[in-house]
Image 1 (cartoon, rainbow, N blue to C red):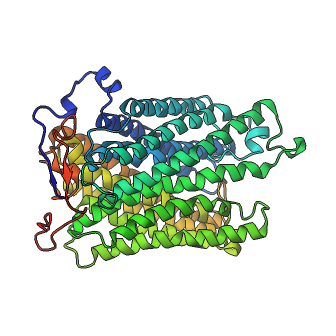
Image 2 (cartoon, rainbow, N blue to C red):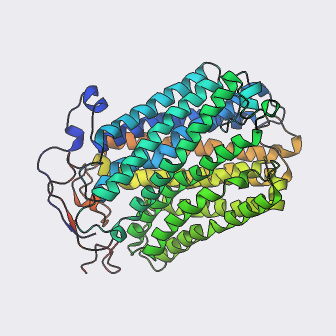
Length: 541
């Protein structure tokens, strides 16, 4: 992207104070991104530890490592931490916080103090959630379904939903900040259709966060009222409706899938043209597809309830809408593929992660169509097929893209390069380990193995062992970047301002960036992704 930019003389944002106080009171969006990055990484490994215990337990059919009650608390801990504390905030709050202002030529987000408050809300909610685990855990699953959570569970439900409730404020404030920033702080010449697709994706995600998260907050408040005061909202004996909780919960939680996936799509849309050295194929269709996914995503929550007893006609409508949301998703996959066609592709670590994202997201999306089919869903509901499907979307998709984005922008964030060979090895290891972990679960689910059981018939053991072996490889793959990225902070070679020869505004300033991003406001004069197909550099025209 061509722009007139003058770098700021003086220190970078990392040298703007070294004390703990300077970090905990900062209003710099780049430092707040680091606060999120460190917190999210810590929660990721806590949730990963719970997943490791789950897979060890399932290596044998007898369920002889932990009791069934402990197993319930383990998969609840894994789900609650990974969904609410890692997957939802990871790309928007860490990478988005760091990049969004720089990508549009702004010096910061619109409300810097609110941005810092968002992180404190996130941290406070995370502490409440961890306190619930330390106190003994929760056995309801991450969905907190009633009437189990309101009438029967004797675990720490109130403490856990308080944590999720508080984290919701962080999401709303971050989304609001992004929306106002994109509307009011774009650099001169940065029109809507010159925005990088990462900005489009996070903008659409922010709209979902602001509109849907209050519904979740209200639902959790009703759950607390029902559990503590027995007011009869969900209890049919008191005139309540147990299905009401599912409608309200999934009204937020299905769009939440797109909160996780849309930013991942934004990351892939930045990496693929850079390492294919080509303009994004069908840029406007890509932007419209993002808005289409965000809009239709609000209309498909009922496909989680095909076997709940809701009207058959309602199920038919939700089934059709679920098929419709595949259209804009398919447009994006097609356009990424077309962008790669005849490109000068470099298989560096970010590109390997991005290609892994496209492949795994495609498999997850296609199996989503299987679950959108009414008759098939009746057979597959609450089996391991569902677990495999949403892990292909939320982990194979979102986490691969998150790691891809982390490697792509790591030189910008730190000013240091990571060891490329280790980066490629980790990307391949994660891709292989992920598929070995979750592809057998499609077969397990189709064969009838239910989810949430800590023991199972012996005929399912071979596939479970394969899955557990894959999980061990996946864990090793996740630990590798933790090691070499930390190493690179001290020993990595200097990156320079634009080591990938990318075209975004964020690459037109120093690495690491100065405190205010740009000394003078940049002026944008051309569209994004103007790569020269011959030289691979920014196109001169």
